[in-house]
Each structure stands twice: as structure tokens, then as C-alpha cells.
Amino acid sequence: LPKDASISRRCHAVSRLTKDGCFAEFYVAHPAVVDDAALTDIVDLMLDEVRPLVRSVDERTRRTEYRASLETIVSYLDYNPPEDGTFLTPSSSNENAIADYFGYDIESPVTERRFVDEDLGINGMIDLVQSESELLDYKSGSESNANSIVQDAAIDEPTDEPDFQALLYLTYWRSQTPDEQLSFTFFYVTELVDDAIAGDVDIDDALTTVTYYPGSLTDHVRTEEFFEYLREEGANKCQKILSKIDYQTYASLFDAVPLVETTDSDELIESEFGQTMIARLKTEIGEFKYVTTGSKQVMREIARQQKGAFFEPDLDAFESFVENQLTELNRRRTGDEPFPIEGLAGEPNYRRVDNRDLLLEGEQ
Image 1: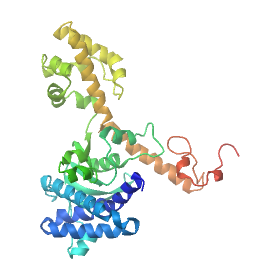
Image 2: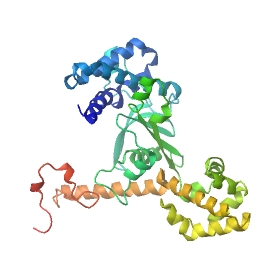
Image 3: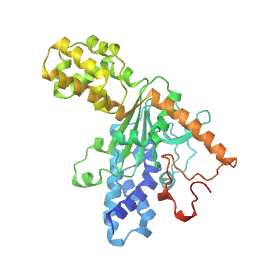
Image 4: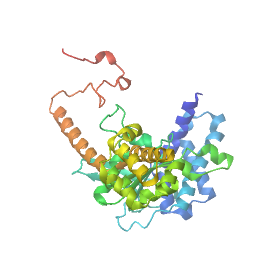
């Protein structure tokens, strides 16, 4: 059996009973019910889902993998219980196979939160409202890092297979909690199966968090909080130069020349802002080589922030993007080119077309 097929089958069962909200939602609502025997029963349910697809000789392996995935979820929720969800109304409109099996109802204000926002033109299902500023989504596939998540949500240079989930959910949640820093975490529940079997689990290795900052990149990186972050967590020379100046001096660097908000660190370093920063820090600290190196390290970290987070202009642009896409969809529904050949990236997405010879391109 090919490795990717094995992973696919593992993820199918985990997706059905974890990603779809069943187990995690049930555990949040009724943690006392989930003991060792209950976990065994739930694994049996998961195996029932894939038994037609799994060879009998692989069943023991699948059982171990499913049990490890469930225990990973339990460990996370035990150490990170959702905050009191009194700011939301309870929801019990969704089916839950595990709750049905054990004979329980679920009325939780923090799990499986469906939203429909007609003003924004978006809808979705939030797996877990961790707190008023934190959302979490269970995933059964391979882990992605924050940079990849942000890149896949790009609308200025979109691909034919974009993934707007984090961006969309944060856009909606911003409408509920404006002017707040928010986060969206993907919890890859199958990521630690091998580690769990080996007895060496670090839950953080299964989590990828993307943060939304209510302001521009410039607003974020000129804060005292970010200054202190650079002093404590930055590269060596970055820490060294910032230890020799105070926050006011650092903040004034952003007043001289506008920051170029880019993900390209070389572009930032070579920009007027970058060269001015280096010159001013040399004046402040001295004509030392480490000042140039440290300044470049500061700017590389600034560019890295842009790569792995969302800012207010990003969400504003996404709202406009959704509005434009809905306008385009409605135009096509009225009969104006009802079947678009081109994808978002501007070329036909042949990977999704079985009968390519039926496509008519160009002038006919």
C-alpha cells in the first residue's frame, strides 16, 4: 500500500470523528465521560468508518494511530481548556455521532460555532472558540507553518488552489471583536501519532498559529512590545544593538522615512528606510560592523512578521476581494460567461478537469 494511501485512510477516520467536531466537541462538553474504556469505544467507531478500506492485518496499527490522535486532543484540551463562553449563545443544532453513541446532548457555546455574515458575504464553522480572541480548527492532514498559511491566502498573487480559511475566519471574528489582536490556530491532530507511540509528545509541535494585528505592519513593529521582543528573541547582533538604545530611539526610526511593508528582507534593507535606519543607528551607537549586521537582522525580522501574520490592510483587502468575487459570480449566473476557464491565477486549472478536450479557449 503506498504511504500516501495509508495516510489518507488514517486521516479519513480521524477527520470524520475529530475534525468534523465529534470527539473534540464531546470532550469539551463531557470530559468526565471520556475515560479509558470510552476511548476504546470511540476507536472502535473510527475503525467502523474505514473497515471496508483497511486490511485486517492493518487494523491493529490503525487502532494505535486513532487512539494516539484522540489522546493528543485530550492532552491539548486538558492543558488549554476554552475560556468561559458566556459571550456566546449555546448551540446544539449539529449532529454528533459520539454524543449519540453515549446518549448525551451537547449544548456548548464554544464548539462548532456556525456563522453566516450576509454583510461580509461569508460563512463557516468554527471548531473551537478558545477565548474571545482565539479560534482553533482541528486538522487531520499534514502540518503547515504560518508562512505557508499566509502565502496560500494571498489575493494579490493568488493560486488556483488558495486556502482562505484562516483569513476568512479572522475577518469574521474581527467584525465581532473589533480593534483586538486575534489568533487562529490549526491543530494537526495526526501530526504527533509517531511521537505519541514513542512516548515523546510535545503538543506545540502540532499547533500552527496565525496572528491578526489590528493595524498595519508599521504600527505593529514600532510598538514597545515588539521592541522588547527583538531585544529578547532577536538574532545576536540585533539584541546587541537594541541593548544600546532605548525604546524612544527605536520608535523614532520609523518617523524619519516610511517603512516599506514587504516580505522581501533584501528589498527592505536596500530601501530608503533601511539605509536610513543603518545610518542613524551608526550615529547613535558608533561606526561598528555589528551595527550594520544588527540593523539588517532587525529588518529581516520585520519582513518575517509580514510573511507569517495578517494585518488590518490584509483583512480589509480580503473583504473587498470577497465582494468582487460575489459580484463576478452573480454576473456569471446571469449568463455572462457562465463557465469560467481561467482560475484565480489567470490560467486554466487543468488538474481539476477530467475532460480537458471539452474546454474551448481563446477566440471562437
